[in-house]
Length: 141
Image (cartoon, rainbow, N blue to C red; front, side, top):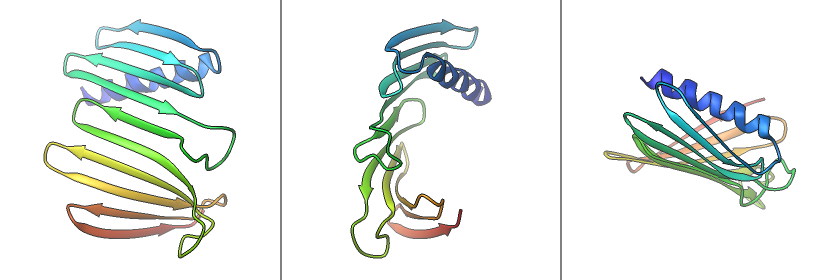
């Protein structure tokens, strides 16, 4: 069932990109789900309803910036609630010059907080706090 939900969500995102900058509401129904997309490429909502429940994704982007402060994405539904927010360019310290993104997830039995730091060349760090423990990973572009 999870593969079907992922497939339906992928189709939803494809429709979102097709409608582009126009502010529209698009709805379609398959035997597995009902999907409603309301918005444009700047902000909107995607709702996927299945027999397992409803998953709602809200997004708000910014200007054409690689690290637009205040852009956000959140998801509420089936198994978890998540939120991602672009904080902006870090001004000082270990991550100076990197774009900072916070990502929080809550499930019925755990919570996790992740901070992503990356530059325009694809280099970055992921700092995670899971149930009180902190982990850091890095990558290069």
